[in-house]
Length: 433
Image 1 (cartoon, one colour):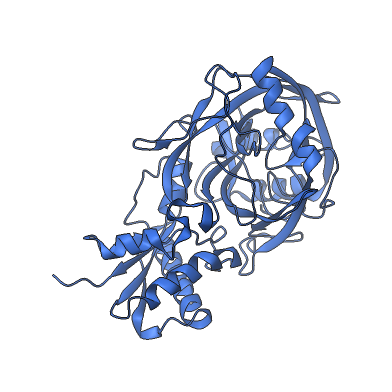
Image 2: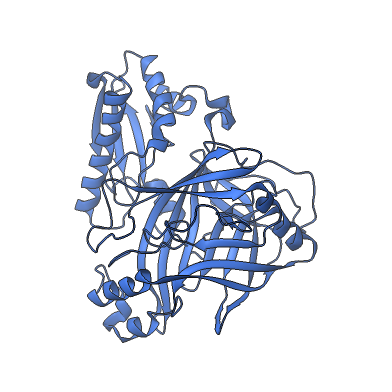
């Protein structure tokens, strides 16, 4: 993510950094306390049962992904970057599905300017036939790759892969990666030579230089081999429509080869043949994990009635609610357009309660200094207020904005899932005693 960015890892493009998931996620797939479990479409034994539509692949379905890039060295995994990106189902028809990715940088982004005021955006197209039968998935790809590459999938695998893992426990598989000719371990020697292995709050100039080398010369490589299922379905914790939920995940690992290189990836897919979403993958010190899934309002509990969850919270004794469906990219206070449906519903709710006086609150995780997070949270809260007032007609006198930074976490900051939830927008109502 530093230096001149030419490639994106994970679901990004030759643009931002990696979108991934790491060894630090030992509990990444564990069910959170109090999380609501959802049944799988294949039983614990992997045998098929009645299919259950958990996350339908429909227009408006939106995902938030936390990504980490790092390299395994003798000092352990050396982190290179952590980012958050958003992608959504932009369109579907009988022939294909179109995904739109939003992230914090684009090709040619220089060191120090990685986090942009205007996020980058690009699309990937997946054929319906590939969602049924492809055994090749692209995880590291460039924003200037062709939008459609027949015979492969993005952001998930195919029904055929799930079926093979359920029936025999194995599947021949191809993993597509854009990487430098030297491979993903190109920086291992460099990081081993650095004091402290490159770890610390600030990135070493040597790491910046190495990243530039890594991202400036990507080649499209395909690693081939066999993946083996790891036991029965595993519980996987996500925020589904703003609530902590446990989804069933198929866990597979294997040894894949390209030329003289070998990687040993681990992947977790949603156990749903209609949309076997990639929930998490790990390769060495790099990983990607889906932390939030927001279904279109009509598919949420209550059928998307204007701000039903927000209305209940604001009218209740706490006089507050989380404003779900509001999205930013890493370090940015730019409200993404994919947030508009949620903000439109909230604006409609406010119009129904002319007596309400509200405060839009910004909250962050604990990555970075307290001062930085306080400023970012305040700017995000103000940005949401500006959209509500300037674009959606909410009277300015009804809304204030305030940032709380890292001071009010709702979950532990020790996990990617917890930090993702702590990066949120809430709204509070001025209540009478």
